[in-house]
Image (spheres, rainbow, N blue to C red):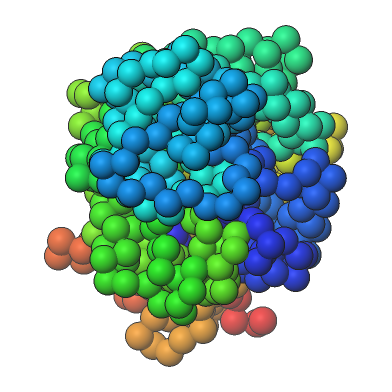
Length: 560
């Protein structure tokens, strides 16, 4: 089972129900809707297609609405501009161009109103993801004179970065607010906030969500130098962190991104905040059916660093091989996870929260008894998040009756959502409604173990909250086999059978039988066996069958 999750951007190459269904089957967990492109009408249809594809495949995926943030771009150009190295230009808003006829042949228009006020002498101005570099010389009334250091061809709508300036543009714009309201109306599961620089940017959106009585997790995209400097305070107020390596590379320099990425993932792991690593992870697969070795290593290293999820952008939004790209990322992650990351030491974890301590205990118990699954019963998903951040070796089923929580769990490392769609509070039977289904779906056999935790909320209120229970499977059909697994002894009245393939050597039968019919070998494995010379003493009261936790014992009257 893959533990880390896959976020994938949907676009023209991947917006149909058929294609999304294939992507979900290939491994898609979270569908990203980029609000920088398209209309609310097209996004509404895309989200409807995601929900329909989830229904067809039988697996819920989360919808992530990614807000655009402030738009700092080149305005419309009549024709591309050739920026030659060492040439001088001026930059300002399009409306200023007519005021400065002396600059009409060297004017770069921008849509950002405050660029001239935000800029200062000596500041770098980067165009088209840093492919062209200019330096601010001096301000001339409503425009700024700049000198090109690295030239190139500048086209309309290309991005502008001001890495040396304290940009006054708000992280949360009017358009973002409208897009956020739209996303909430469409029941989105996550909101990604662009251009985050300080904790107040996140808190502004949190306050709005609170006033609207909406509890949607916020993903803070870390892409600005100021955000890297303020990372600790941003982590404290956000729900998820995204290592947005695109603009980060442009503004910090690509040579610094690997070290910053490792630092960010480590800080998030230590503070138990999920983290997504994004941008150009399998960029080559936009046009090619296979990635480069370096890209495969990039994904694997993010997994080994401890990222909770990895994200695809243009590869699946506009690429030729969206399904193959997800399948390739799935394969890389599975291979990387064969070398598990070391878990945080308990002494470094904050276990003052009762829920967190219970989840850690459940994880450790499951590992020690070799449980097949941890069943984490939750209403809000909070307890699953706690257990996820401990990085349990045992796969986790997040069991809930809330469809919104099911989708939210799609991002949590190591957690598989388990939706109880027909939950009836008045007639609910945990054993019948969940345990039996899990036994069947996972093809469990006698002797297999499940660790069950009940955490937050009122869900399954009749069970104990903040509790851990071990369930031993003991009523599944016996494993058919010869004498190597099925031992037997008989006399004229009875036949006693012992299925050694499921016997847990718990010695319950040894302790309860007063006739010494059951014995345990003296070796370290403590294997249970039938003491044949004593079976005539058996009174057939079936007490050994009653106490056997795995159903390994049967006593059959000979007249049957």
